[in-house]
Length: 272
Image (cartoon, rainbow, N blue to C red; front, side):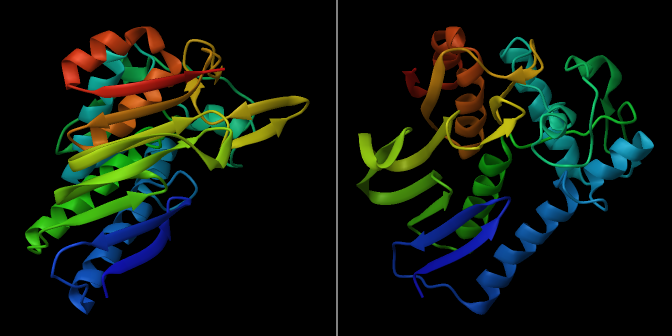
């Protein structure tokens, strides 16, 4: 078997092996181990997840190192985006109708004065539902990339709902999907080794009363972003950086030049 498909964090995933290696039972079991662990730890839709426990109790003792690393990365993204990237959007999303755990209150997104994290203990204000959706796919893609490399798979593509990492000896062309029509192509890019992430305000949408909302929250307004950018396409060295940057540039397109230089990005922004 050269291709393996599964569903996790609300999207369809495809891992393709391009070289001589194949999927075996051991590799598939390791893939599902990563999936189950990530969902059990970080899903804001589960009452038994670590983020739900942190929201309920305000602290988490002896957290996994991965949780600490994710918080460290989230803090870095908050700083480089001048506050535009916030993991404190969980309650906002639920309040706006995207989920059903928390209702009726706005929250502060500049929460880093009230969060501490170390390998011994994480603390956060009670009631704050942290959300790692701004880079969760990228984080998982890079974990699968690491798994494939340690399993000695030479060439592969990890695709999580359109965000992907490619490692190949030859260039592979990927189409850039039109944000308004999935049957149309906006452009294309060729990758031998690297990541591509796309973000859009026209896909994950819902109605909140008479208003149309989407899942990319602008912390400055505590509401769906209204920057005028409806889609972003970002190439980077890792899926984690590409995913986070695609989110940030929807909210703060004015940071494009700064972030391109800092993280060696290639970017396309589509305006309404």
